[in-house]
Length: 433
Image (cartoon, rainbow, N blue to C red; front, side):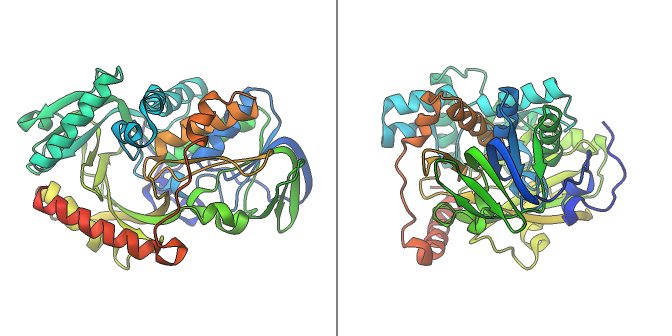
């Protein structure tokens, strides 16, 4: 599809997504008292996935959002459907046993399947495309990627294809890589338009969304109450889905994760011919480094290129200066390219890199900390939350029973601890070990 001309960005955000958003709907603030079966805190990927699932099951649901739908990481990310988790399945087996690995593996692709189901069912226009590739820069990366492909095949996902040497050029035409793998059930999309489409589908089923209504407190009694500055919601159950932007609504939950800023630039329109040469398979690409680059082409023939992390959620002073050298290492022929969009957003990191899912009371559930794999994982975990409300706990408990492990050094020292770790693993990447 062709995008509308660039206009005033959605919700004042500077991203490519905000400038090309469709279905821009302003929703009211929460004022006074509202009642419902389930109140959802946060109108991002997790919250809207759960809310839509619950509305489909016949529940009365209200979503309350501090800014606008998709304002946080859900509307600012790389738009990549990367199946799996931030840790490989063999790590699940190592820490939690073979049965946990089997359960994690069984639903490792469910998030991307949910996205495809909803795009088809509700006619969501979000430029969804199939395929993503994880690429390596040296032999150590390729040893890791061969292991990942073997792991995918062991869990029955035999369509994941190892691409060694020049075979990787079928996906990305760059001298930077020595191979990778291709997952046809990965993909990429216009993230903000997807979550806006979920919101529209939810409202069509009778759901209600209140924007510009930051949650200040969640009472966790048997009949929980969600409070904002000008109103409150009395519900039977509450889902807390604020992730890196939860703030003070639930300090005990926000204190368990670390906000991490990731930065992205968007080029000028480069044209179909050039992008067909650089991205022959029109797949999303992510490299294997500890702090990876991730990039893709857009429907209007630009490149969105992201990478870099700042622990603590503080954006660097010059995002273009940080990301542009990486883009030019990948595609040196773009040295004179103009950058039209520059933005950043925070994702929620956990100490274990596995999502945190559970209950803080019999009536209040939460999901957070997708650790950089949120596009697909949030969709799957939104369904887990809805199933739990419906009394189906089997798959919910796969995640809920994982032990919580706090960051080394606590809240005061978690940032320097993570910075030291990133230096160490970054050095290993540079040395090829």
